[in-house]
Image (cartoon, one colour):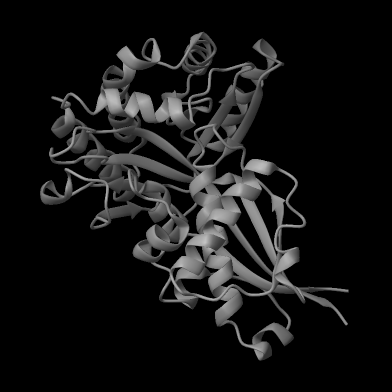
Length: 349
């Protein structure tokens, strides 16, 4: 008899910058982001005879803690937790600006829900084809992910990306909701990017990372002052979506992204020691621009640096030039993903 598994896969998230952080202001935690096919996260849920085996395959202590938190949120909501073992088949590195925490939490919350909702007959059938999570289970929507995954109190870009993929505009908190960090209206949209465009990702060695308590401290400092350029950033974000979607206009798209991220970098510069988070990321940004990539910047606090290319051939040329100059760096060519997370049932002999 085979071992029935439920598998969920999702891509990673680039965040191009927040527009506003001050409580009570319009567009608080609004931002622009993009879901990529790679790097990706893949997680499996295997039937078990006991919940004691739930995290038996998770070796990383921080990952195990994050998954256990999602399990606890489900219990607090009065939902049952299926007897299963959870295993990471491929994982996104945490604290690299790839939205790994959100994708892991959303995948875990969705997998636990599907384990409860799928019937024995569905598990008994071979179903190796990947299917959309949001189309199978209507409950798995942004509000579900906020409550059961514990994500989205600030940016909702990762939540939307998990469900839909694409180039994402998060309009942030409504003015009447902006003073607090409670449950908010999720106002997000996305477009499918041109299939020929590519994103080159760079990870410089020993780059500075900001996360946890330090990130909370910096957000608190940033929240003391309003951003005078937020409306300009919002207009540039809308222009980027429009040029990526309707005309697949790479020149307008990349220029809009560059102008948007320039304003975002200026907002964070006093708190991260410059336009970019440390000398290694600054060097990687300069290198990416030198080889000809457009819309170059850091994702969230870093350490991921990215740049856009209009086609794969040029992206590969940039890749080779970067690796030649910096063989110690990790470099990857990726592309935007036009769909959200997917699931499948599979059997292993």
